Length: 115
Length: 251
Image (tube, rainbow over the protein chains, first blue to last red):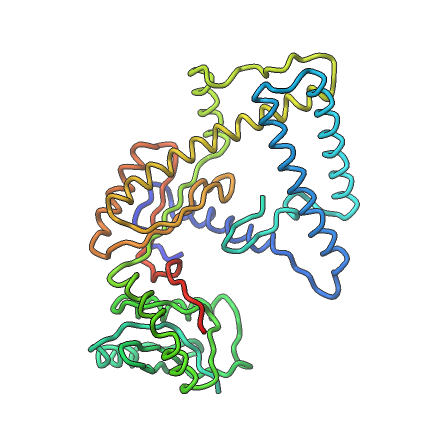
């Protein structure tokens, strides 16, 4: 970014460049790059991204309910066991397909990151 | 040879002024620029073979540079990089067919500029501050609600619950910052698009369309916000061509 386009800033220009750089690199790294050569791993990434999104939504909703105090001790115990097993299974799948958390956060262009 | 379109402009009676400007600037790869018009609408184009178009950072910067120069003197709708059409006739036909939509968009951005506002934070420091404040206010329990028995599942839930509460605190805080920004912008009658929590350190990423004459008021308003939130870093940029406020699909 051109320095004379900055109208207000209390930090340093280098600091801004670094932050903007992070935003740009996030976009580049998190694009889903499907090609004929990587169709298998690309598909695995896409499927696991959707699974991870749903898992996180379920986890968030569960925490809202725990925080709301509407669950019994036994229900919390069972919920913890289920969510923890889902979390571990997800880690296993990521390892199997050589994927990291960042890989599963696809950039949706103008809509931003998926998660 | 195809035609690369840079911008759609509202030139009205200033065609000569535009001609004078185009003589002094070059398009991408040094191509000469010229104008094509339909009624009150003009497009700035250069000849460009599709095969010779190299898509890279420097070409995109050159393209944006042309739009930037034009926007300093004319109200315009910036085109997306790589907007190519087959011939001058095709462009004029496109202008004729989309005339009402183009006019409507030009009217929306007339005498206005786009400005950007990003709010950065040190996420670790901010979270600590929010947690301490919330605990002091008695809004967040210092210990989880769930009684910790000898169970890894409960430990796991407690950890997730703690993370959930921190996230709620952060989102509530960011919403309050955005509320303050929106209030200031409403006073300036700005049109805004704001995204929150783009990254852990970029908590607000917004663009505003604002009357050119109100630039100094906007800077002042951002200064007041910065004074109110000293732990955050407000960065305002501009003026930009209205990249985020041009909305029409070519028929």
